[in-house]
Amino acid sequence: MSVTHKIAALACAACIFGGGAAARDSTALPGRAANAPVVRATLAPDSLMIGDRFRVRVEVDKDIVQQVDFPTYQGQKMTDKIEVLGETAVDTLRRDGRRMTLVKEYVMTSFDEGYYNLGPFPVLYADKNIIDTLWSGDSLRMTVATFEIDTTTQQIFDIKPPFDAPLRFGEVSGYMAGGLLLGLLAVGIFYFVRRKRQGQPLLGKVRPELPGHIVAIMELEKLHTQKLWQSNRHKQYYTRLTDILREYLESRFGIAAPEMTSDEILAQVQKLSLAERPSAQLRELLRQADLVKFAKLVPDAEENERAYSNAFYFVEETKPEASPAPVEPLATDNTSSDENKDA
Image (cartoon, rainbow, N blue to C red; front, side, top):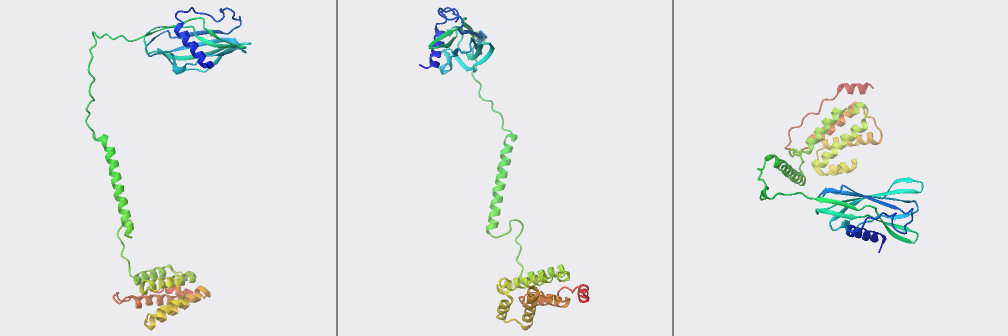
């Protein structure tokens, strides 16, 4: 049997037989040394109602070299009718030279009324090769009372059924709002997925695709308002001018002009059997653009305006016949031309 189990057995024996045994002080036992540890135990409160808690406080005065051990109750019960709810760690209450006082408390309760004589409290004591049990000098006694019920004056009623409370809008409004939001979210996701699969913009109406010649004219007018060559950005001006024509050729005739060189474009255009004038306009523009982009040519104002006119009239003269009549290109910025000529 382990030391813990032995202490528990001793404690139970004290509880069971303590009522008939006389209280014994550990210092008064025969053969016990005068300096043996002294055990004191108190119980508070000694009168309580059923289910209330009470504390058992145990103090041991001993020499610093003497070994003692406090009981640990198995199954959290001191007896069949007294339950141990918890216990504190062993602590040092005081110390005077070689003498010291250890203290430990137990929290207990009982759910059975009656008078209980717990007897003296046991503590295990080890002295050299001898293991013995020390007992507190006083027996622990307490009274557990219960509530009295006068059945002659108290009437017993059946348990009432649950109260039928009306359902209020505030109790379900949150669920309704959450369901509505989830429904709207599901519809929105379905809408966006459907529009994306159909290749339509997620928001707004489907914008009709403009014909290639209209897009080219719009881009040429936009380029004219940027005044690139007037700011001595000739390379950017001719690069954008030829890019507009390349995109137009791809849209209008299916020629992959954006990936072709100028000679490859002219070879493909020659197969289209276009009139001599637009073909010459395109040839002159591409040659002029190559000189600006690769030979660092700086054309004068008249050449820059003629390049713009060639691009404009090439688009107008090669657009589909069902298109409206040609329109005149934007007016030349005479002031800028004169300034460049003077320069």
